[in-house]
Image 1: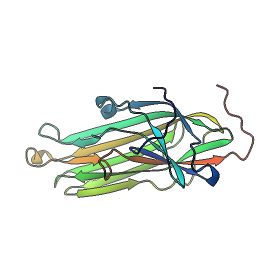
Image 2: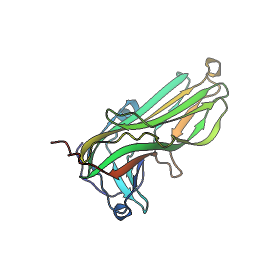
Image 3: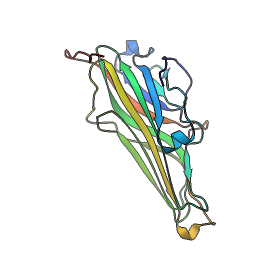
Image 4: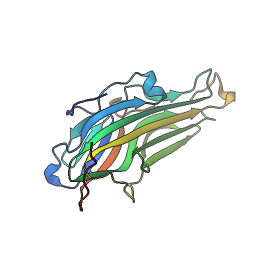
Amino acid sequence: MKIAPKIAPFFLALGLFVQTTAFATQPLLEIVDFEYKGKQCQQLNLEEEPYFVENEDEQILEIPFGTSFDAFTDEHNDRVRNRCKVHITLKVPEGYRVAPDYVTYLGSADISPEGRGTVTARYRLAGKSSPTAVQTFDGGFIGGFEVESPHATNLQYSQCGGEVELIADSDIVVRRSQAEAGIANSEILVDDAIGKQVLTCGLHLEECHHSEPAPIE
């Protein structure tokens, strides 16, 4: 789905750290295209546009995943897995290159006494390695959580300028024991304090330090 760049409020975030303060208040990356994939994204028929939001220290790209990105067991399912993935084409400004740095998101979990849950978030440039955040919940866990990957120690940069494909996805798995059928269930919900589906991914944007022409389109 082709879109035009715009500034809008907050849903799902990709944080873009900008080294040059002079550019911190204006978008340097443009969203050219996007596509939702994955089981739950398709079930929810997601079509909302990603967008940039500004603050003083970084640029943030937000991707709405709707309001019901979750996984829960029921009387018919002892194990449930849901996944939502977004492919975004970004235009990198001439003279700059970009790399994924970290990924984080918030949520809540209510795991049955004999159950288990796992949440995984990752994102990457197409053809590059992926910062990944994983958290596992043992039986009986009830409460909120924040999943965050370490900052990348070996940044995988794009070429200088041109277009790049960014892939961001989130995966939720919940289980309960067969003995708990009809007695207890497990649930994980990805959200934030205002009930939105929020994944935050950091992108490291820097000037190119050598001559590297953008690819010919």
